[in-house]
Amino acid sequence: MKYSGWILDLYHRDGQMIVWLKKQDGSCVRLVDDWKSRLHVCGQTRDLLDLACKPYVPNARFVEKFEKAGDRERTRSLEIEVRNDKEAGSLARRIQWLGNYSKFRLYDVDIPAAQMFLYHKDLFPLAFVEAEETGGRVSWSLKDSREHVDYQLPRFRIIRMKLETRRERTLRGFGDELDQIQLVGDEEARTIDSGDEAEKIGQLGKAFREMDPDIVMTDGGDSFIFPFLARKAQEHRVLEKLVLGREESPLRVYDVQGHSYFSYGKILYRETAARLLGRLHIDEKNAFISSDCDPLEQERGGRVEGGKRACGGRQGRIRLRTRHWNTRQGRRAGFLLPLPNHNVEA
Image 1 (cartoon, rainbow, N blue to C red):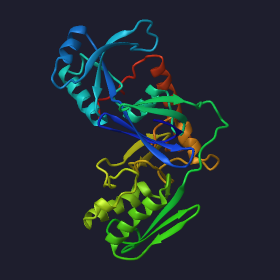
Image 2: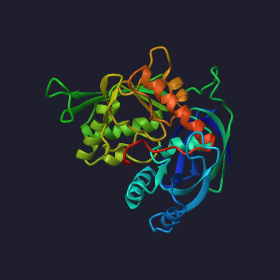
Image 3: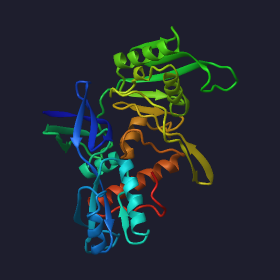
Image 4: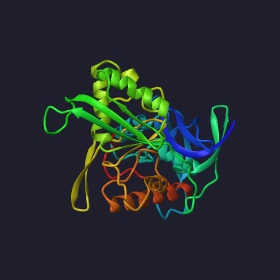
């Protein structure tokens, strides 16, 4: 079956890429493409052959790639398929340990699978595409251009979500009681303020299904709103009702915490982004939103998958775009992408 629309969201699940298209009639369709991420290992041929025979190295084959910038001849490398990003990091650490951190050179390890999928298929977020599903695979045809500055986007259903608590202290915290939740859209607004906390969470899930937003705007969604709701749902044992994405999977408390980083003389902190699968979540506190640029333009121009946005000011956004432009160009030319100069991290 053929579909046409704009790439709204995508994420990787155990060897499959899930892509949500926003169709021209306003509806959304979920496409499943059988696609696995791949990491590459370079080294002596004998060592690579020994590595390929290991029981924990699945679906390995030899390919020819450019290893370094300036190379005129391709290098023989071992290409290994992995099911997800976690498996890629774990396998990379094991390979480094096996080679005593000197025999093997690893590539294409730290790039998220969804981002690598976009490079591999020559696509980008919010691009207009045609897709045809055949036997578990999807054929993609790009009907858009990264260079266009005058482009058309669909009319997205956007809601702004606010949460209020009954505070026990001056600053709100996870121990506060849930007071009310406001959902404000272009055509409809709802306030959830009746019942106990468990009932309010159930009403929230129902409201998301009925309003079916494409984009959810929050102020502190990553740092407080969604972690607070997930903790309350776990506390009252109603986690299965906290389904805010288009997938039938509940929102959960994050296993991965935010991280601090140094940028232009400042130490900054970024929260782990809350993913509402099948929708876009934009936390205006955690993502760089320019006053003179629409957030959807930044999403499209960033060349990265939904949920990944530049932070740390204008310089951070420029640096992120430059990095992804270089990465995409390198992939198209057949170059391997080296691991940063530190040990593999999960």
